[in-house]
Length: 357
Ligand SMILES: C[S@@+](CC[C@H](N)C(=O)[O-])C[C@H]1O[C@@H](n2cnc3c(N)ncnc32)[C@H](O)[C@@H]1O
Image: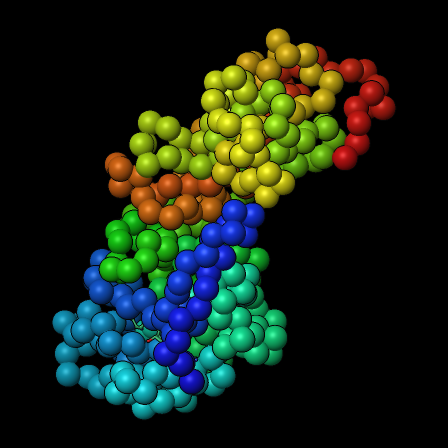
């Protein structure tokens, strides 16, 4: 049961900063889908083609998804469940099991909560059994697995991080990245996943209404680091600066640059830094750094264009021009720097001269 209490979120353990959270809202992922822009034309067609008699939302909240579907489904029956007794649906713990209704399609926006966030937000005790029993590390993945177990056709609104997550459910027909903000109380970037148990093909990726390609093709632009060049991240006196995230100002995107250009206080660099940092490349002369950064930025732009950005993690909120902000993970940053280094600096004849990592 979801209980009405507060919890303390660790904002910064080092600085002793905490924030009070609504434990029921956090543990229950109670962020309701207030706006309708998730229902793109191809998603509406997928729902209609199911030709279902019932529409099931096992995490029904305020029933907002049913309201959005009303013009599509007319008087057809809707079946909702929720764990919160104040919401007037039949009570069901849908993270354990979802009742089956024949001739139905399931449409839902389940709770999202990563295991590490549950700990940081002080609600671990109310959700830890779900993670332990399922082997998944986020409530939305547990929810998806339970929905798929009971229904052959499903539509999920889930965090956009699903696109690059290691969990891949079979039967995914399409993933649609939603650029509009559809919630009032969270800026978590989301996507809509259409699932059909009988589908065996490759996932189609849409941004809004536009089909941008197939998942396998877009993923082929992801470089993997060979780790044959010594590159060290989060080094306060590193000679390369990396802004690893797009800023709100859309002219300031992810960029490699000589350290002096970054103008970031080195005292803020920690082992855990993931957004702005300094990097060093061993065995490289300082005069070569600007050229390596230039090459790295060229490669980065090519990869962003070719993959339509989808291999980069989404970052909260959009830039001022409405595009999704993205984050460069350090694995891809390393792979890009390795390639830039090899294409810029004359290679030594013997591989032994390169340090192995
Ligand atoms: C993200 S909200 C979405 C509500 C609604 N589907 C929408 O899109 O507006 C998730 C809902 O799941 C409910 N919930 C959380 N844990 C649940 C569980 N174990 N079983 C059933 N419902 C649960 C919450 O109370 C909340 O209403």
